[in-house]
Length: 68
Image (cartoon, rainbow, N blue to C red; front, side, top):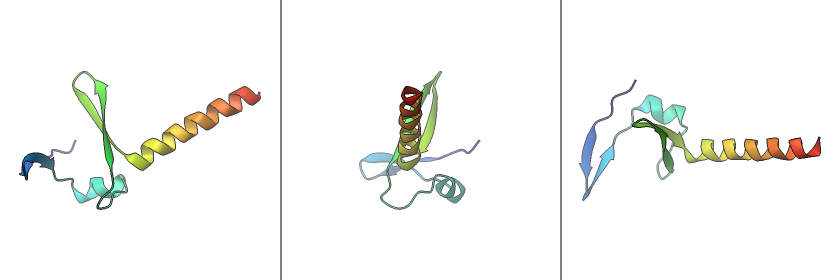
């Protein structure tokens, strides 16, 4: 588990991600990330690109099921 510190950024709050996490999520400056609520007070951090790739894979899977 990686602990993140909440800091003040302007009038809001922000998190600084460790380089290891940035590399695993393939993030760069200006990229968007998604914070997904997975229940029981737990959240999952995902890159927008990874989320879109998963959605495309699901759609392609459905398309192949209909062809069968």
